[in-house]
Image (cartoon, rainbow, N blue to C red):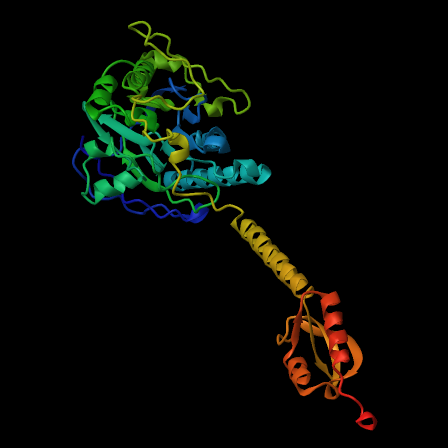
Length: 457
């Protein structure tokens, strides 16, 4: 498979992004934008697959817009993220106006980003949810592509399949650096680690570019449940024949047969002239198609569509709640087994509400320190000793010699200078006691050692 060169990506600066003023130089296998208006004949399908218990993919196909989003989040409901994103992006599906295509795509992705953030703000349990997004916006002559994550876009032209997007994944960075091959990437233990996604938190940084279309082109968008298991030659073979409906359904079936353990979503669209479109069965069915989690965010429909297609039963397994069994697809094996959907974003724990967690952690630490200090102080106040205070024998409470932790508890009428020299030295040095009763006993014993008065000598 040869990558299809495209325009230089633009930096995503939000709604104020300006489209490039000049087209890039012509490159091999590209075409000039058609002067006659073109139409899209499309079909979209999403399947929960044979292992997952719910579908976190969402897809859309309409006269002007094609989109695939693959939600990630596990317990954080990736289906919410993908569904919200597609339902926001579908607002782009309208006839082109004066606003540049790339600006419209950028705006749509930012709106999806903000909608996901709003969902998380309303329900903190969704913190950590995110989704990939691959979008192709059509204006009758070309498509503007916006891409973030590891869903993919392809273009079939003249029987040759070209990947038009680049995965935002760890293994793709290894491929770009020449450290591993694309074949090795398919079995790499970290192939599911995504570096970018729409999560409502991080800045949206999609790849943005345009591609001129020609009659006979076929555009294909899919989640990694398909491109992660199907070889390029197999995808090209399926895409090279039949209608968009046939190709999309066959791609899903082939993905499941190849062992895909993920949800599978495929969107296929043919580029047609007005005459070709009018002569095809597609002109009678131009309603937009929304599939997967986005079709109904409230009602879950996890059953697979594939109990048989063309060749009969595909041997579908009922969705299960247990971990992925050993040997199914490319499931990462571990002890205990690792859920790929949770593992996918393992290195990127969501930092939402980080300030609140830090404050709570600091409060907990300070509380523990306070309890420790209070306990230590309480213990010191249970300690007693006998020493001199203003020339008198006194009982002290606390630790002898430590300012702030020692204070006079009781002062006796016994003068220190009336004691024998040895007793005076002991008092001046401090006499430790087991408790207060022991301290009073020490004072009584000292009183018995008092020196006799001069008139008795």
